[in-house]
Image (tube, rainbow, N blue to C red):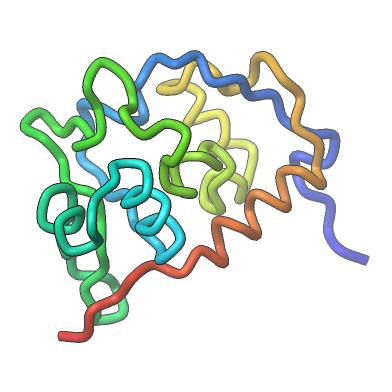
Length: 148
């Protein structure tokens, strides 16, 4: 029998569109092949143009470089302009937030994140099955790598 997870009865989250997860803090939005395809379609840009305009390569823990969205000065996401300019095509990493593996490790991690995200612990109840589906998608979202 699998151990019980703290979100056995679900977790509440409704995005408040406050943009705190998109702005003012340094971070990485990793892109998968699917993310890149969706964003190129959304902006009607060829892949090489999108990468040159909106992306950067950053060192990853496994010794490769991975493709990420750029940040503007002040650490705003490059896609931010008063709101997400690609909300309907945003990367999976963004669309499954806050259901990321490290935030679901334990209740303390979840509640610590709630201190910076006003949508956590309020609003829509997401059941365990839905959470685990999002978590699996997040874990299986293979980022684009460039060998050094």
